[in-house]
Image (cartoon, rainbow, N blue to C red; front, side, top):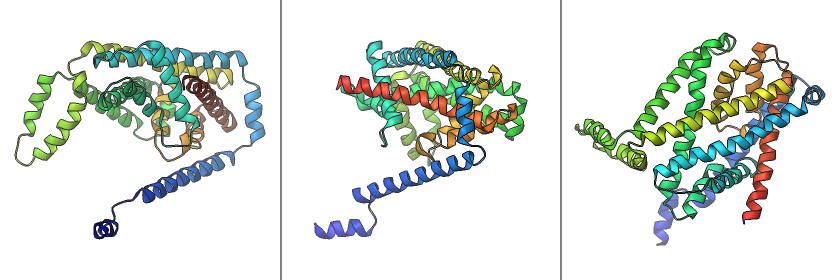
Length: 332
């Protein structure tokens, strides 16, 4: 037995200690990147200018912008419920709103690898449903939300020459992402007969391994096969949700007197969202500020004002996280 353990160590099978060290190192790198990005962007302005820009904001509009999060929670719960129903899982809207609120707490305020989506999946699993069902519904939920954003971006990109000049081939990237995601949705909700027909294409010699891998992925989404009604309603709620999100950011822009046109937010927010999903920093800190400065600069928005926009928006998320933490503490 000792010889086997020695052999495992020699061939490099990772131990729990090595995994922990890797996690610590990865977190340290992300913190370092966040600090570097914050230092870089703040070197171009100063905190007094950012504070001044924040002080001049309209409190009424900021409160209105924050209130749209409530609508966002409700709409998100309805979309989640539609997808759960497609799997034969019955959940009440109040429970789903509560779960979503707690997920925001875990997603933004805890320095751990436990993401909000993990909490949402756990809540469904805890109600007696399988892990596969719990996880796949969250994946589809997220995917449809991002698809709605990319649809808006695919339209708005033809009305944003200022941003197109900033990023070469942006139209190509956005349209390619739209096409890939559209195909992904079709594959997820495709009728089972069609899936089997497509599967026969991989019966050729040498493709057996590929077919097995794809079959495992396809089986995970089997509950959504041919559920066109669920797809239609989930997409509807996705578009409603993302319009709400874009208006939330637009109102912050108006409150801060930035004067960036509404149409531009239908491109800026989707692209910025995809950029901030890149896991190179802690909760997109640093990456968020630099991204908004980059996208708002063509509209003559001062750096301090762009950073103020970023911090106000993130501050609202932190407040929601605190509220979610209170909900979590009460339900415990």
